[in-house]
Image (cartoon, rainbow, N blue to C red; front, side, top):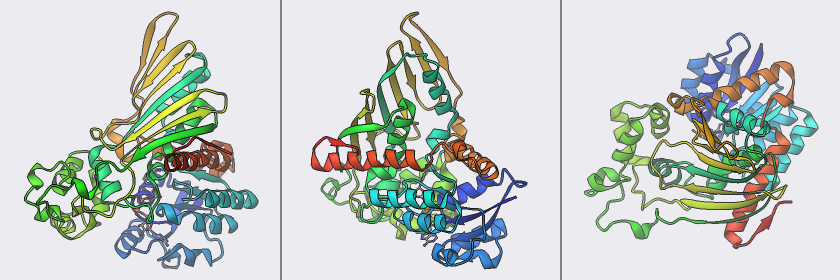
Amino acid sequence: MKSIFIIGAGDRGSGYAAALRKWPERVRIVGVAEPREAYREAFVREYGIPADNVFACWRGAAERERFADAVLICTQDALHADPAVAFARKGYHILLEKPMATTADDCRRIVEAVEVSDVLFAVCHVLRYTPYTHRLKDLIARGRIGDPVSIQHLEPVGYAHQAHSFVRGNWRNEAESTFMLLAKSCHDLDWLSYVMGQPIRRVSSFGSLFHFRPENRPANAAQRCTDCALAGDCLYSAGKVYSEIFNHDIAPAVLRIVNPDTSEEALREALRTGPYGRCVYACDNDVVDHQVVNMEFGNGTSGVFTMTAFTEMHKMRQTRIFGTRGQIVGDGESLDVHDFLTDTTERIAGLADSAAWEGHGGADQNMIDAFVDALESGDQNILLSGPEETLMTHLAVFAAEQARREKQVVEID
Ligand SMILES: NC(=O)c1ccc[n+]([C@@H]2O[C@H](COP(=O)([O-])OP(=O)(O)OC[C@H]3O[C@@H](n4cnc5c(N)ncnc54)[C@H](O)[C@@H]3O)[C@@H](O)[C@H]2O)c1
């Protein structure tokens, strides 16, 4: 039986804890660190954590002798590097939320600590673990489109998701968390490199905060949606955004972010007084709402990536891959494989469970399963998002952001 310590019992920490429940005979959660009392107590009750192993901060646990086999680090972006280094040095195996860290130096520091301590390590690049990605990689490996030469990839963030996470929420402000490309799209650059089977060597990038700015605030709009006479006509009114999200399977997880008590009355109060009820044109947000990255891969092939807020909600990432013998068009759930020679298209459907939005179409569970397998076998190769490759794709993200800011092409070291 392997034992797990969870750092950060927020959205991701509690999601992974629930996924670990699939293996009651193989793994158990023996500790938690979480400063927010309501979330910590709920977690302790849910998993029956012994009082000795309950901490308000990960640092308390890092001072103790190792008391678990592995740690899941699920704190916010800027709070990844120090616990990752501290627990690697203590000999814990590590599953670390993305992004690895918010600076390239901190990413390198983590990889060094993990390698020196020789612990198992994976970053939660869940997109690598989807049945859809496995099938796509397999099609390419079997030569179905010849050599892949060009790739186009869209991350359709969704207008209401942008408002929730990147205008009002946890990832709105770079100084508090990190820049948008790292927070949202480190997944995408990592996935593009994985699918093409090549490191990213050179990037350019453009993008800005175009829409969610004070100058776009309508005259007479109030500071908060609950007081706003224009709320009925506003696309981004909190009432509308949360009812839009509420009409979808993802609702419970999102509402729990707005407030741990998700009763209607408590949620109304949270919108009246908390960050998620603010006018989207009167927040302290500064991260971009659209960005493109052009990239050249190690073998001279190329890719183009678009992240945009301005899409309909609940769409999965969309990709086109053009090869020397055919092309593949994918939407996260199905793949259309077209063969140039026969001029025929095969549709491979049903590659994601669209009811499983909360867990990235089943990928969160697959990644947890792989981590449990790796803990039992001690085999790092089971983990698809290990230290060196993740470091490489994170360096591409830092380079792309540098390219956007400095308006130049940046080579990746
Ligand atoms: N892999 C993915 O697809 C994916 C998806 C969403 C978010 N994320 C990443 O997961 C991480 C967590 O995101 P989240 O949405 O769960 O955030 P969250 O804010 O819901 O949870 C983070 C938790 O860490 C706790 N925390 C803060 N300081 C702490 C400390 N010193 N010790 C212990 N706990 C502490 C917070 O109180 C909070 O409960 C972020 O880095 C985010 O970017 C990854």
